[in-house]
Length: 191
Image (tube, rainbow, N blue to C red; front, top):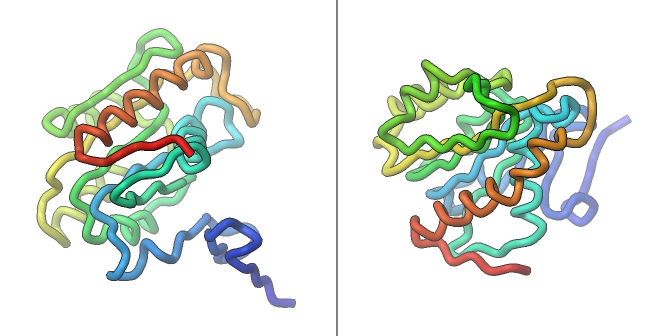
């Protein structure tokens, strides 16, 4: 039995298979502008660990961006994320971060502090983002800008919704993301 899907069924997202990561095939081809990437990572089955994915989903559902940007639900993908980073000039990573502060603490690391983020604050997801960004830097020109926005988790238990402290700061996280995009010259309009 063949597992096929159509763009119509899944809103323009094509699936590699029923259990496979979501792959936006437009991001793979050179004719698609991939210069600004907003990447939400994490496992949505583990409460607060899915923070980045929840934020990207809300952005896709509620906003239009001009010029078009790549909004990527990175889930728990690893090196496959390199596909989305070809021709990327700027990346905004949204993640749950173990920084040792109170649950719900919002972190923001600008480009010049990115190395510190990866050495002092541990991302709770399984993707080796430091390795991915280093490989990408070897393959292409250096990034113009990179920013990490994250939240201290309260729970990594099985569950589909973030904990109360993380849910309480989701509007702030979204506003920080939109502010960064506007600073990068992206027009943001509610749908």
